[in-house]
Amino acid sequence: MFSIKLLSLLLFGLSLLTDPAHAHLHGLLLPGTHPVGFRSIDTKTKAGKAMRLCIWYPANEKGTKMKLSDYAGIASLGGSQDKSELHSELKRTTEMIFDLESSAIPQKEFDAALGAETWAMKDVKMEAGKWPLIVSDTEPVSMLVTNEWLASHGWIVAVPAVQYPYTGNDKTLYEGPTRGLEFLIQYMSGQAYVDTTEIQALGFGGGTLASFFAVMRGNKIRSMVSIEGGLFMPETKTTFSADYAPLHFNVPLLHIVNPAIVQKENPDEFNAIVSPKYRLVEQAKLAHHDFTIYGRILNGLLQRRGKDAGLADKVFAELHEQVLYFFINERPKEGETSTPAYFNLEKFN
Image (cartoon, rainbow, N blue to C red; front, side, top):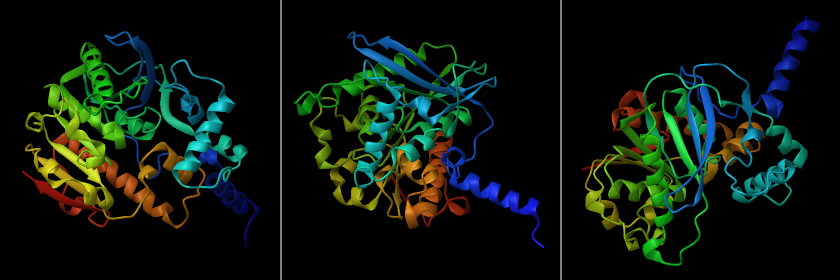
């Protein structure tokens, strides 16, 4: 007979699945061995431009974990810090990205989802030692799940938050973000806790271009991962940049893209990169932002991803395993440990 106690346990378990505050922001990702800390540092670039450095790192103490809502406005420099306004803007962006009708998600439901616990603890002490560094120009909040996960596996992840005006000139289109990333690398290289021999770059979408050009312009970065970036698409105008020097791109590149991006890429631009490069082509037809916080909110917290929910979780997890493996080994994982149903690996050079 069904006992009252067993029924209570089942109802409690169901509540965990349906309550956004207890849902799975990180999906199928499992944390590494390190607690995660987060801090932000306000500084200025050489040109005097205000910049906020957002840093995730391995921590050596326990503290109160941040709520997802604590990240709202973290990258805002001089903008509104009104929480209700920030939450509404985040909701509107999520709805727009996934082509949902305006107000498709009730604000109360969305606010409840933002109560989800993250892995990061704000301003806790960093674990002693020198740590490999990952730099990224992608908007800090957008990739926070990825940044927390990498930090839990022993990396420092540093992301600059700064607003660059549109130059109107194709030659200088990416100059601001590139110089900003270079400033970040220089700043972080001066920190005693950073292993300057192990600096890698990560980018998502348009945020991949600064890393791409920073590799061409310097010698600090030793490998790069691009997720859904249009590095070789004519629309990106990559070759117009004054910093474009493909022969100077001399580090391993993991280029993770969907088939639509591959179809638009210029083969000559792709082949101009002569360093070891790997293209990991997604076989599942997922949305661009399934890999960002917007996708995690819609899928993991609000559970509104429909029939693609389970697939999105699996692909999200496999992508992260590939990224971590590449940063450690400077090549993708292959064979029985990979998931060819989700990605097709192509090797070049």
